[in-house]
Length: 465
Image 1 (cartoon, rainbow, N blue to C red):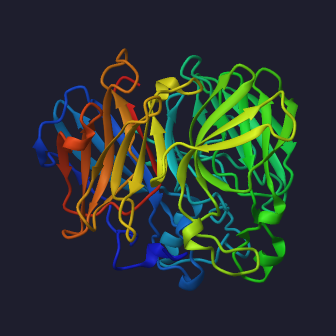
Image 2 (image 1 turned 135 degrees about the horizontal axis):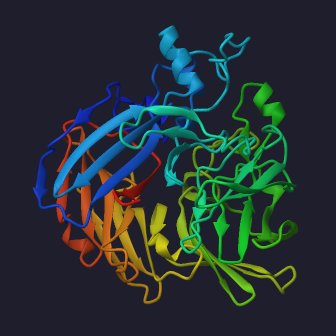
């Protein structure tokens, strides 16, 4: 995979250029009546060819939201670009503009750098939010996907907002953070909380050991963990036209821990293994230890090393590992143990267990040496049993999103939803897998005539939310 896979015309990274409103989609077999809501997915989909295709990175494409609406056994589909300031300015110009809109803004501020809103999408406090970690959220209309604009929660948010906020299933509180809050070269970070009603109750700054890309974090019932891992920022690299973030293991790994009831005044730093993590499955407290299940790389993909050399492909495969952090220990406080040896990414679980110990988890895995993620895995983290479905050669799976069979169903009893790329037909399907029988294949398939390009993250929102 190159740094510019979104421009690859031979794969499903290539953007699509149409916005659809499709109803009555063909369904193979029967959709469960319990699936009553919408799967929203987000991913990069450049509106125009970048000015410098050789330097374009997949992470920089314009955000496009894909909505699969399921109700009473029927399915519809809708997609829209998020109308960020960048999207609107380029749409008006009819072509790409320089990064960050070099030059003075329009009188009405249309050239403000509000990001690309291309990474994740969550529903909180009655708001559908498209997220990208370097900027504030964009709010969308859940029914039409029209863009309502930047959402700063009555001015209480000022600066970057993570693409991976966590929602406490007990209180409904959203926990979030931001990195590079003083600019990309800065080590400043922020930690905050938003009530279930949408009121910002905490927005506190703190300093990390260095400026790092911090894509995800972990939240337990009592603690918040911030992994500061050595994908570091260099102003010198940025000014010379190189990738500003690069793998620099000499920086070392660090874990910041905050008590949720005390805020940043309780911040403690622990040394961690020199590795990289894009995504956390879940985390919980075990006495005075913190446990977190993560997708761990020896070094990150899609980024160079600090000396300019490309990363080692053998080191850029993630595996599910369990971190334990003993808050009473010294230099040996941090340990990492492998839970599964499959090359994998995009971990999910039954989020009714968020912040508490979970038994089951899901991820997209890879069974073939070449190609994309081709397997959906449902893992029993207690027994180690792995149920999986591998797609035909050339096909690929997206992040599996868990939906419980009912609000009161036992943990892990429900369905996994994944958007599958059908390479031979150059189009996509929505697959519904039953967690009781993953290996049997989809119990229902919603068919599209077009592609849903490879993206990042999604979430299910029930009609009663």
